[in-house]
Length: 319
Length: 271
Image: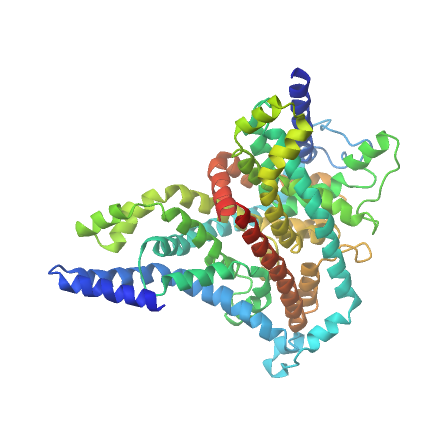
C-alpha cells in the first residue's frame, strides 16, 4: 500500500515539476479508472459479497417460513442449525452420495478425457480438428435437456443402453430405479457430457511435447505403452493432477442431474449436498438450515481448493 | 505402422459414435409418431416423419413463451455482462489507480467462493426489492462476474501502453481511448465472453428455477424439467423439447467454436 502511495506521490511530484498539464491528466486518468470500475465493483459487492457474507449470518438464525412472513419471528440460534444437521441422517446421506459421485466420477472422467486426448493427439488420426469439436460438443449442451435425453437412453424397458446389454446376453438393468445403480447411471451421463472439456486441456498440453522426444524414444526401441509411460505421462502429469482436483470441486456441485433424472431417488440414493440444500431452502423454506448446508459445502470446496493451490505450488517448484 | 493407424482411427470412430449417437437419436425420436419410441428394440428412425410434437409443444404447452424468455434473458445477460465487465477488466489491466493490486488480489481470492453459497440471501434480498419472478431478478447474477473481469484483464494486458500514451498526447479523453483503441483490440475476447455468458445463461438451471416462480416466466431448461415430470410417458414430445432447447446453443457453439475454445484454454491453462 505504502509503495503504491509513494509511487503515486512521486509521479505527481515529477509531473508537477514539468510545465505540462500532467497532474490534471493523472487525476483525470484515476477518475476515469474508477468510472470504468464502479459498475462492476458495485454489482460484485451487492450481488456477490453481501449475499455470501449474509449466508454465514443466515446460517446462525432459525429463518423459516414464519420469518419469511414476518421478520419478527426471526431468532439467533447460534450453531443449532449445524448441530441439527450433523444429527440428521439425510444430511449425512447427501454428503456420502456427493462423496461417491466425486470418488468415482473424477477418475472416470479424467481417464476418459486422457484416453480421448492421447488418441486425438496421434498424427495418424484423420480430421483431428473436426473430432476435437465433436467430442467437446456435449459439454456446451443444456444440462437439463441432455439429462432428459439420458433418462430415455437409460430406460429399463425401451432404453438403448439396456438393448445393447441384453443383446450380448446380459440381464436388463433398472438403472435409475435401483439404489445400487443410480449413481453409476448418472455418472455415465456426466462423463459423456463433460469429458470433452478436460480433453481439450490435455490436448493443449500434449501439443507442447516436442515430436523429437517421441522420435528419440522410438529410435531407442520404446513401444507405444513405454512411450506413453516415459514421454507423455511425465509431460502431462502436473496438469492431470491439477485438473483432477478442480474436477472434485465441480462434482461437489451436482444438482440438475439428480433433480431431472431421479429427483434424489430411489431411496435417497442420489440426493447430493446441493440438492439437499435446495429442498431444505426452497421446498421446506428452512432458509437458516439451508444456509448452514451451503456454508458446509463451501468449506469442503475451500479445502479442496487449498489442496489444489498447494499442489500447484509444489508442481511449479519442480519445473 | 498401418494397423496402428487403422486401430487409432477406429477408436476415434467408436468414441464419435458414443458421443453423437444420443444427440442423433434425440433428433430422430422427436420426429416419430406418438408411442413409437416405446418399443423394444428401440427404433432408430421414424417409420413416418411427423412434426406433431413440435406443434403440440408450441400450440398447447406454451413452448414459444419459454423460448422467448430464454432468448431475451440470454441476450440481456450478455449485453449487461459485457457493459459491466469489459471496462473494469481494461481498467485493471491498463489504468493506474490507488489500491489496484490489492483490489485485484481480493477479487482473485473471491474466485474460490462458489456463487451458490449466496443463493439463499440473494433470493431474500431480491424478494425485499420485489424482483422475485422478474427478468431483472434472473439477470442479477450475470452482472457480478469476477471470472469475466479476469478474462478481459488477462487479454487487455497485451495492449501496448505506447498506443494508449500516443492517444493521450493527441488529447484523446479516456472514454475516447476506450471506445476507439481499446474496444477494437479487445474484440476477440469480447466475442468469447459474450459466447460464454450467452451459453451460460441459456443453460443455467438452479437460479432461474428459484427466482422465476411463475410458469409464464420459465426459461427453456426450467420448463423442460417441469414438463418431464408431468409427461414421463411422452418420449417423443420430450425429445422435441430437448431439441428445441439444445439446438440454438449447439449451433451457436459450432459457428463460434474457435472463440470458445481459445477463451476456455486461456482461462484454464494459463490462469
